[in-house]
Length: 98
Image (cartoon, rainbow, N blue to C red):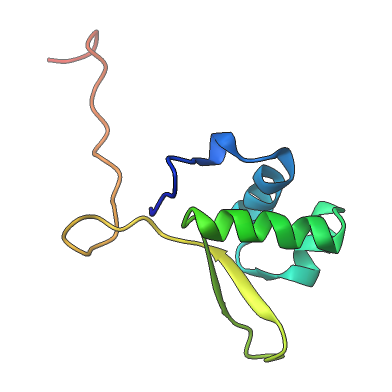
């Protein structure tokens, strides 16, 4: 993730965190769909998306069903080698290790 001025999601306003969670649970959405899901005003959602885009958490794409709208999605983390980041394999508990 790209970050500007050391800002992270924890530093964002509550509205931006809510928009992030809506995108995390419901997948790629248009701004209008985010407004409906989050029950925030359109202006607040616009500002939240702008903040999320600024720190590289949200990506804006063309919404092919209606080119006048944009489709917003959470950016996938990318490893240094260019592949997607995979979770580390789960380790056994110390008490149960053989």
